[in-house]
Image (cartoon, rainbow, N blue to C red):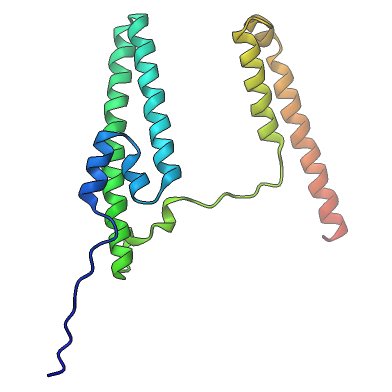
Length: 173
């Protein structure tokens, strides 16, 4: 009588608990699943949408209120479904099933190294200019008159990149 008794282990994450926690507070279900960064991102997005809804409501624009309300409701349901599916995928991975949804490593893509900081600098400059314009330190009209400078800078960057590639190709590197 060498019968092996297989005791099924309790799944590491409960999809129901993840869903209930996500209903209580957006992002909490993913924090329960072990994805703290994803959960905090969901919480920040939800807070931003809520702030946008409050701003729209005080502005009195009914189209903006309806649109923001739909975005808020859609995101609420999305994050609930996402936390439940993540818990199911974790359970499948823990059980050893090689199912399409079982791979939780595919949830976060790897960053691709670009080798250039140009576009990051461009975005920082645009953000700084927008902040300065919002505080009336510089004026939007001035920025609008200077937009061709951005085209010139981008063109120069493309020319310099082309020259650098040509030099690299000639040296055989």
